[in-house]
Length: 228
Image (cartoon, rainbow, N blue to C red; front, side, top):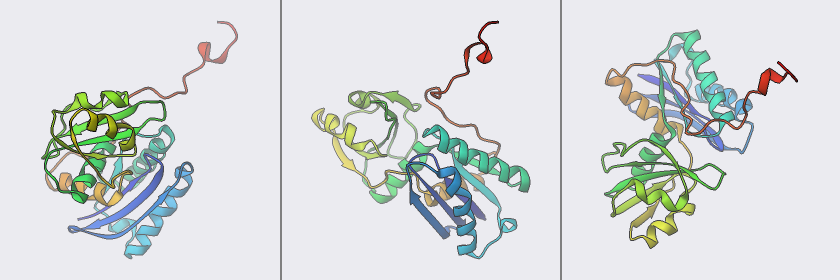
């Protein structure tokens, strides 16, 4: 099974080709903006690196959020277009799941994993996973000091780019905290998760973006007219 996976949900892009339990090629680049311009070029590059063509693929995978509005839309639009054109199955995986799996792979310690993403609005997107990486509730928007409400007291590994905002409060509250290097979604881990789901027969569809709060842009009143 050969899968093309790519991510543009946060401050960067990554893409990878997965084939039969291993990564054939991958690329990643940190960037605060410009994901929509960089993503397709990166996809073409990893296909070339792997010596593969689009017609060689068996499936596609993309992160669905939460994350930046622009990056998520760029990634999902590209994935949907490719899936429709090729009729390949498309698997959507949350940013939380990718980061939790990356953290557990990097630091295989017992206990929960708490994924924390900086919203840049003085709060965080957060979701907790148990030792088997099963979700302990849905993702939420929380103040950094409230993240401890998502898990019982005990050892916890943190993932995501908001670790530094939350770790001091958890330590003060009595948690045994381990910081992980998983701060951005990795397309290699995304591809592995998608491969597992396709192998289990998970349904593939056109995934929707996961927004935990509405986008900042809202339609103008009266459609922009001065009066009804």
